[in-house]
Length: 275
Ligand SMILES: [Mg+2]
Image (cartoon, rainbow, N blue to C red; front, side, top):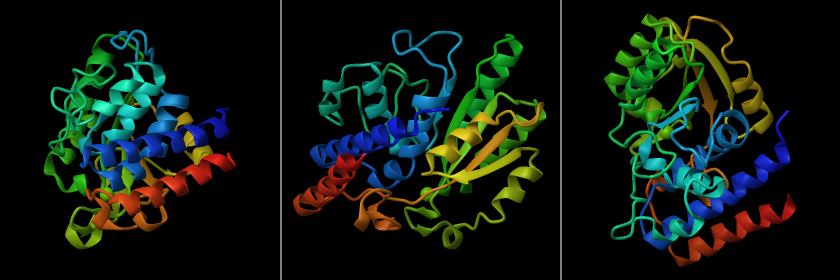
């Protein structure tokens, strides 16, 4: 079993790094970065097979951040694991920095450029299909936003994933129920989301997206069924971890002012002191 205490600590450390990066750069997507932090921490510290000293190792599990705008947590984790120096996080969104506002594969540990929403799952289908054709046993994880599921290309990829029986492909939906314009159910209703994925031939698992035990156990079950792609619907809270940012669509890409920054940092550091 994974060390849940370690995951809790890494998640707080990651949220603090996200907050600092966004405040310093005066730009970023804090709400969505916080909602997927615990998913990323679980994957990188407890689930995926990776080697920070050999980012292009052929046997590695692949990760695609399809909701590319929420990149800050990914940078913080890759730096913490040693894919690139931690000091580089200070250059986030700076002139000539490779740590730009959306992922690019110039950054060690990042497979593919993303950010134009709706493309990540198709890329994941290709990677998973290549793995099958080459007889490799790696897995491919693709993290999508729930607002992103309004993109039709997601569902083309969903069809292809089940057509090619890609049981090495795992989609994850960061189900925070909000997108830039408000509630997903008001903007473009997703429910019944489980039934939709099932209809496309996917095995659906659901879990608490901030519950490490639940996350670790859920990923540990995959593949639950052979010959089918899997999707994990992770129920999350946009802005998770900072009281006044939680459940607020307005924090999709707002930058905290000095006072908000100080309060957010205090809340996160207080929690850090308790673990
Ligand atoms: Mg969302």
